[in-house]
Image: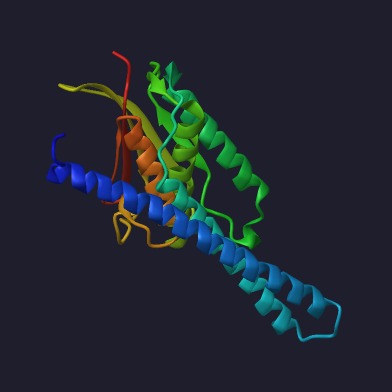
Length: 234
């Protein structure tokens, strides 16, 4: 029996740490659910009595905060688990991006500006030729939607009012053909948004980057441009 190499020990340690992290997150979510149950019960009791509006508002904010934290923990747990991709050949990136832009534009048009709607709309500039590859359509579409939504929120955070432009082109190199997707966000984010866990948006974008990388691609933030590369069929 061969002794474990340093690399093997590291891999085993990382795998064990990943399993432990998922279990810890699961336990934390259970505790949060218990807190939300008590907070919801308290809110209902307060609604039946004449309580000051600010007290009810505080309870509602507490419940909303618990929901956001539970969502963050769910994404962290998802990040720590193996990805199960069901890839198929002939999936067109243009169709995926068009669907993402259409879904988000519908959401933007249905959201009143008074509620803090995101910047928009989304405009896609794509070349005419198909950009097909072997992808998991559903999982990849969700990842690209997360990136597009994050780009909208970054524009909105900077109080920008205008269209989010997404460019989609084919690129060739010594490694082969790839689809290049770029989001122009106006100003560079303060951190590497694709490899950070500082807040809900960063967790969501990091999970999206992991999905991109699982497809053999890459995700990076180059100044004010978010850039994704995905391998295309030869």
